[in-house]
Image (cartoon, rainbow, N blue to C red; front, side, top):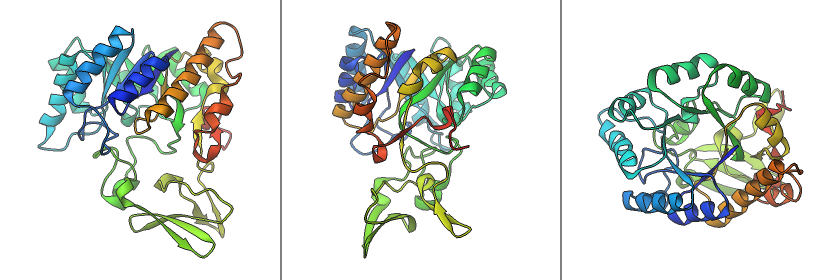
Length: 328
């Protein structure tokens, strides 16, 4: 399976390449990508230099242009597609139907991938994107089980890419408006989910309160680890009890089920984390490279790997999420 790794900066891209990535994905420094954070992403010159570096080492580069164009400002997104193709990226990752049509018509030879932001999670939707726009690969939302992925791969004739490590979004990507409701900014339109400028913490006696804008997301006891206040990971009160939707805040880690994902027909494994530093990128990519190489040689892919990754996980815990759907 192809190892697709994140890069928020040229330094992180080099770290991913040197750690064993097959592909590095990144975005331009503007609202056209869903990780539009200050200090991250690439200028046109930086992307061109990074593509040259990656190709020299046999590594592909994908450009994420996966937010939804704003009415009257479509030229920004069109230019991102045009520039990415001119620079020579190996695929452009898109979500918006109009932008997919533009890319197909303007650059018929470009390889197009469907972003998870499009939230295509069934056979009919994926076939539509393949038929109408020539999409070659779909990044599947983090809500499908292993058996559902296996069934899709038997029927669709399109490559599938699944998330392997990092943030565990429990919503259907591309349809979440919670962040926009609370802060006025969302990943779909602005490239930011729960932006840091709206985050603050308050000490109340023996508890810590995490807030996003005007909303309390969680209240932690003195014996609990304090997490980042993402709306869908907040603790909810219902029928006199407080709890999380599915699991306590945790990180996705599929090292335990890599052979099962391969058997289900998955083409590529996507590591999440373009906002992470190069040390994190080196450690995670290196661990997955070693694990995949061990499996390819007939060994146990988990040996010595999971402990290293758990230390990088939210709450120092991990989950296989919907793949095994232990919370259903």
